[in-house]
Structures are given as C-alpha cells and as structure tokens.
Amino acid sequence: MQPLVSIITPMYNNEAVIEETINSVINQTYTNWELILVDDASSDNTITLTKKYSNINTRIKFFEHPKNKGAAEARNLGTKMAQGRYIAFLDADDLWKENKLELQTNILNTNKSDVCFGSYEHINSNSQPLHKRVEAMHTLTHKKILKANYIGNLTGIYNCEKLGKIFTKDLKKRQDWLLWIEALKRSKKPAIGISETIAYYRNSEGSLSSNKSNLIKHNFNVYRKGLGFSYIKSLVYMIQFLYEHLFVKTRLIKTLN
Image (cartoon, rainbow, N blue to C red):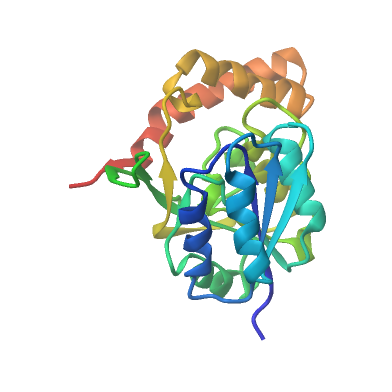
C-alpha cells in the first residue's frame, strides 16, 4: 500500500490561482495523499472556492484562521493536522508536475534519504513559462544548506515518520529555509535532489528575490533570530551565504529555450 503523503497549502487571497494549484495535486499519478488547505483569513473568494473541493473530495481538508497570522502559522497548523508518513508543501500559487509525488516517494521508500527535493521552473501570473529553471543539486547536506537555501519549498518533502513533525518559527520571511535546515539537522542522511523539473514556481512582483536588500536582511534574521546564532556568527554565515548565492547558487539557474 502506498504511504500517505500530507500536502500543506497555506492560502491568503488566492482566488485567481488556487483552483489550478488544487488540480495539480488532484492530477498526480500518485494517489494516496491528503491536501490540507489552511486559509489565513482571506477576504476574497478563496474560501468559497476551496470549500467546493473539500466538500466533494475526502482527500482535501479545509482549515482556517479567523485572523491573519502569516504563512508560518498556517504551515504549522497544517503540519499539526497532517496524518501522512511524508509531508510536502505547495504554496497556493504554485503548481506540481503530474509525476512529482511518484518520483519522490519512490526515493523515500528506499530509505536512501529522509528528505527529497527537485528542480523547478518559473511561470508568470498567467501560468506561462518564463524560460527559467532552478536545478536541484544531486545531494544536499545540513552543512551545505546552512550556507544557502537550495531547496525550493514547493519541491520539498520529508519523512515525518523518521524525523517527526517539523514546526517553524514565525519569521516574516524565509521560514521555509529554517524548516529544511531543521529537517537535514535531524536526518542522518543527505537530501536527494531530482534533476528533472517537478514543479512550477509562480513569479510575483515585489518578491523577495527581486529585492536584494530585503534578501540580505531576511537571511540574516534566519541566522540571528531563527537559529539563535550570535551576531558575529551570523555575520560569518552571511558572508558564506553571499558567496554561495553569487558563485554557486546562480550556476543552478538556467535559461531555457
């Protein structure tokens, strides 16, 4: 029997894209999953649209915050409610390729790793390709991920049965990086990366990656507030981060024809 995969999707005013996101899960070739939708006090039609799915598909479960608490709290609630052996994440505006879960569960079932991730491509607000691909490393250690976040959260999955449920601190940004740092800290094995595209990341204006000054500030907070490093140690890691971001991570970003 296929192990159950819990998929956690935080939502906030995503009425324009949430149905496409949900359908990318429904269309998975791997069928033993539960989709946990957590609404963070949306003011648009997101709740109505998602309840329509949860009312007709028992694998889709809906929860909501009466007041907006942020993405970290929404993911944490989803994690609390998860019942699967494996836990994966899919933001409300991103998409999965049909064989994403099948490829990853095949790897996790072999016990070669407790964490798996993969390559992903960028799309625009209309789901059209932007001809940009972020390639996954073949393997990833805890030491390496401390220097930069090499796991696209929309591609990550971990073995909850082996690592336990992982809850993240309520930082304004980059909570997902903290989660994968903790996952690899708990695991005795490196994460395994899938080289082929398994997901599609939707670009938005004003995103963190488009604002370099915010990128530096929020990454420093991961070290200082998220991991509790001293000020000096955080600065040392930020220097390593800048090197990784400029000279290693950029090499993984490819332009597609």
